[in-house]
Image (cartoon, rainbow, N blue to C red; front, side, top):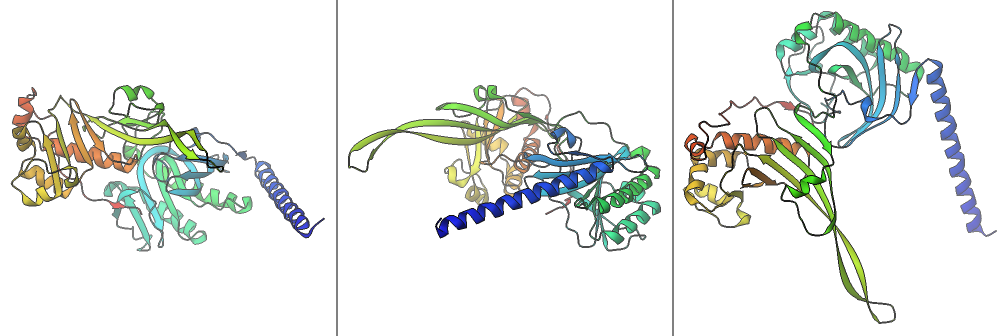
Length: 424
């Protein structure tokens, strides 16, 4: 056998040995878990994390649970340790069950960075914990009540063995990132500590903060009225999706609305086109072949409260458009409409200020819908467009709505919310 052949044999042998070693180690690990009465599931379904809606859960469209460990602590409290991958995060998460569904609460020790996608206001840390901790919540009163002296004591005890704790309350689950899952002998006492913290939270009088049970469906962080559909090819006949080509499919279909804002539909559309091209083969002869091209577009539309005349608003690149009295606005935006007076009525000075302060993706009113040209299908883009359109429609004058057949504005002005402290 040649030297190259021997090298190949050695490499294959080493690869096989490594593979066998990994399999043996995994089998021993799973056996050690089962010896404790715990259950190991190598292929958990999405239902294992469907009840969770706070980051790293509830963010984005990719949500993949993997290896899962479940069981009960010595006090009988249910726990779960699971590997989870999302669009902007991947790792292990440990959690125990609380007796009540509570609002979100974020507790981070040391210099721990907030989780990606978190939108919560930073609260003062209780004196029992000191300034080294970061606390986040939506309501200061809730955070103050939840962090009782007993809870703070348990937090300090956990931090002594695991610096940089990253803890949250997600409904009826107490969730911690990066549990010591590799060694069951370390994981077991860690779970007991987490159960003690959960017991301290359960013992704190927080019944007046109990949250309602959400419907059983895929959820989105801070968007309780968004619904995951998945696929709905009927949308290709009712939206401005490309009609040419073949093999049309939809994916990541979402419907919903934000508060009293306009309802929306958003999805990704994929299709194919075929064409014949001529080429020269290796012998210089002219040949033809069929080439299939794959295409993708992202559709985002909001249903308007009534049919509205055509109006398109976008960056100056879409053409000169109608001229307004604001030179700064004309340099930044182009507005197109069949009825110039209607455009002036809708795009008044206050509306111009709003557009310049909150530049949207190009959007267009077509009959009873507002269609956005986002170029991206993501939770953030949908949320931003929803918030923007709600504010835009709230600034449409009352007389315009009356001219369209509505007695009052369907979207009264709302006070701007305080800017939250977001995770990176």
